[in-house]
Image (cartoon, rainbow, N blue to C red; front, side):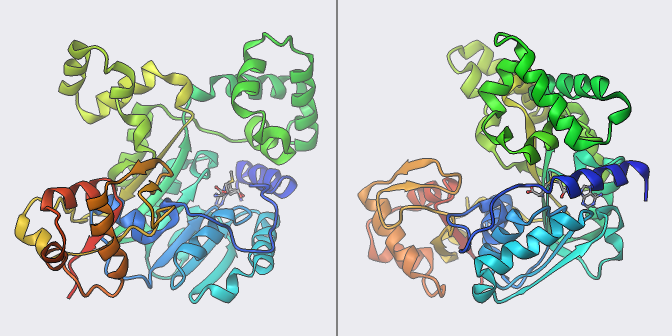
Length: 401
Ligand SMILES: C[S@@+](CC[C@H](N)C(=O)[O-])C[C@H]1O[C@@H](n2cnc3c(N)ncnc32)[C@H](O)[C@@H]1O
């Protein structure tokens, strides 16, 4: 095993991450990025035809995300891998304690192995989740390539990696701790102590202290989080340009950011029509770069979906195709039945009476008996109104017989 990987393994054996407490019940709520149907719908505009999917959680840590994968995909075959045996032990304890195994009808396997050797795993995966891991590999390109090889054709991959602009103060602090640790680098308990002492010693108006207080302090109360942030032995931070080089190295298709709201130029320039029309002329990548240059402190990470082509996207512009589709509610929705809902991203949405009535029919359509045309024959609603619900991802459609 490489020296760097050993150092990373030692960090997570000392401080397994995430330090979420073990609970007596399965998690509540939802995270649509881990819900295969909802995530596939986001990527393609259509509900997938299958729910007995194969999922790889690459670098699962203590299993908080893995448990959500189980909760949202109760018929899936899930493989969760990590290099830290301590993190894996906690992950196993987490699912044993919460009782999720009683509800889960699929299979779950935890395995200690580096994701760079994923090629040795049997078969391919429909969904690969890799959150907070690739930026800790000595060679992230090799890691993403290994995962890309295991993605099924038409499969989707969710990735989260760090961004350099919003982590500038973190990088400075990491370097400062390393200098003061000297020969003790690699002693992570000492690193946490040195880091906490530095913060306690710096004046309150110091930039590093201010950033820690305004942005990270709450999560960094736990030493596991503090260590993960400030005393990591291996970290690559990206900017938009290096991110897209990284994505290109995978050979996969970029589908879109999974926090799309932050990547809207309107939120920064909408009060100047000339700047907005100039921004509209840019390529998608140039526009994203502009956003991070103008709003650096908010770009602390990149989270996005990639896919292995071909992945057909549905826009539902053809009236006849839309009429034949079978609609149902997006399972990642909070507050239904009500006209005040939280959507898949937990954003408040208010729907009107007509939307509500149409959605009531969708909610009952779990076995897919009714097409959009069938429902429109019963209610006063239009195809364009239906398209608006699709766009907001309040409903999803399929074309299955
Ligand atoms: C920051 S934690 C993220 C855990 C989890 N994905 C989450 O988001 O909650 C990073 C995890 O990646 C694991 N890891 C680091 N390098 C790895 C590698 N080469 N192969 C597999 N896992 C690795 C670490 O052991 C650690 O548990």
